[in-house]
Length: 260
Image 1 (cartoon, rainbow, N blue to C red):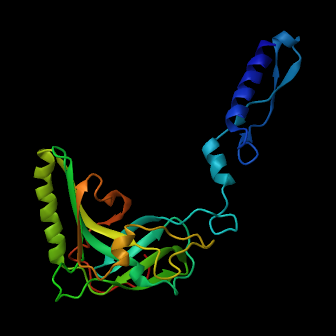
Image 2 (cartoon, helix red, strand yellow; image 1 turned 180 degrees about the vertical axis):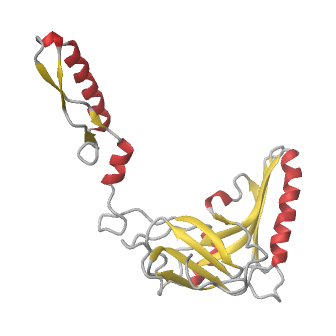
Image 3 (tube, rainbow, N blue to C red; image 1 turned 90 degrees about the vertical axis):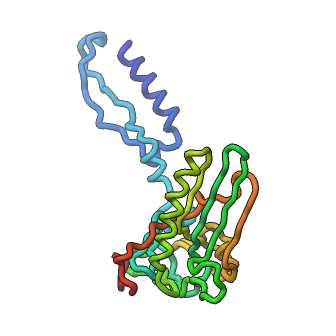
C-alpha cells in the first residue's frame, strides 16, 4: 500500500501540472509488471507517471504555421547582407507571395543611441545610408524577391551598394562609444532594419497574419534624410529593431540569384 500511495501522489502531481497538455502531447511509458511483497507476492501493474514534457506538449498543441488556426504573426529571425546591395531576411515561417507588397515599406537606417547615466539624458538619431546631403539620392529598397523552395526567406534589393566608407564610420563611432560607456553611459550604433505596415497589403504569412511594425515611422517617411530625438530614456528603442552586420568590403556589388 505504501508503494501504491506514493505512485498515486506522483500521478496526481503530474496530472495537476499537465492536465491541459496531457491529451495534446504528454506520453505514458509502457506499464510494467512488478512483484510487491506487501501484496503477498502477487504481480501488480506498475503504471508509471506520464512523461509530461509540457513544453513539447504546448508546441504540439499549437496550430501548424499557415493552417486555418494559425494566429501567430511572422517575425524576422535573422537578417544579413549577401551582397552590398542585397539583404536577405529569414522569417519564423513561410510567407505569402509578396508581389503586391510595396518594397519601400522596408528601410534601412544608420542609427545611434546614447544615454548619460549621470544626467539621465538620452539622445538618438536615424540617418539615411546616403547621409544628410540632399544632393545624394537616398537609399531605398527597390524590390522584394521570395523563393519557392524556401518560403521563409525574402531578399531585399537596395537602390545601390552600401558604401564602404559608411561601415568604416560606424566602426569609428563604436570605438568612441567605449569611452562614453567607461565614463558612465550606454550607447549603440549600427545598421538597422525598419518596416511599416502602411503602404500596401504588407508582409503576411500563409495564414494572412501580418508582420508587425519595426521602427515604422522611419520607413513610412522615407523622404526624411535624418531624424533626431532628445529626452529621457528610452528615447530610442534600437533593441526592438533588427540589427545587421555591415557587408564585408570584399563582398560583390551584384545580387546573387538565390537564397543560399
